[in-house]
Image (cartoon, rainbow, N blue to C red):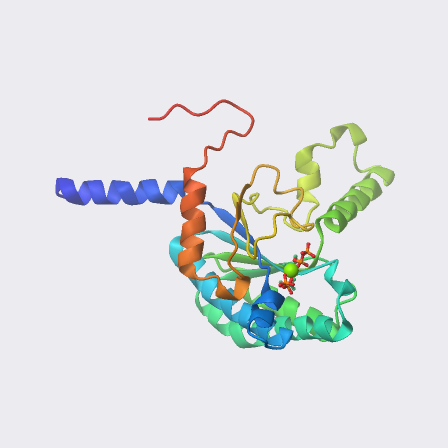
Amino acid sequence: MSTSDQSASLSEVDLALEMPRHVAIIMDGNRRWAAKRLLPRQIGHRQGVEAVRVITRAAGEMGIRYLTLYGFSSENWKRPADEVSDLMGLLRLFIRRDLAELHQNGVQVRIIGEREHLEADIVALIDEAETLTRDNANLKLMIAFNYGGQNEITSAVRRIAREVKAGRFDPDAITPETVAAHLDTAGVPDPDLIIRTSGEKRLSNFLIWQSAYAELVFTDVLWPDFTPDRLKEAVAEFKLRDRRFGAVAAAKP
Ligand code: IPE
Ligand code: IPE
Ligand code: MG
């Protein structure tokens, strides 16, 4: 191997080390995207699904290992019934249309959030997607659907309390790891980078436990306009951040 080959491969390693392992995205701004074009809002949501396809593919190609996308919050039930039904329809469409390709690309699909109140056929599709892709080891794609961080933590607490009541668990032995292991995201590393599109600067009940030390990047781009280049920009911003986790800055090599 020549010297130049060696330095090329070293810088690739460097790049890989700096990549966020887990990127999570609050995909916001579909309605405003449609309104700007005087289009019905379901067209905005539909375009949003196109962005999901493109970004999922790009994330895998960039070497991101875990990608979590916020698709429907536990608070989104407050929207008009026809919009809720459109959003449910889009999850159906996404799984029906894209599952085969995702599986072919070695993507593992997992849906986090509550299954109760979802229609039986959607739950069946979710089960199908998770079962088919269970052993895939490339990108791990988590879709947060009917998801709310407060509900997720509440369910975890409820399950831990049941174990305590049954005498299987000592309350003094409960640690943050115990709580994490009872969340929907059990076994998944916390997000390194959370991106929110559309200019809003809040988490809206997304991964509120897991985001403790996530780097946050906000962009004004509306979700249907979010492209792989925008994702690369967010990752570039992440790479400039100095993550200290409460300690002192690491000495620069
Ligand atoms: C994000 O876009 C999609 C969902 C929340 C389901 P919105 O529908 O929130 O669009 P804006 O934020 O109102 O523009
Ligand atoms: C957050 O967006 C939920 C999703 C992206 C699925 P919202 O548009 O529902 O959030 P708020 O209401 O602006 O906080
Ligand atoms: Mg919104």
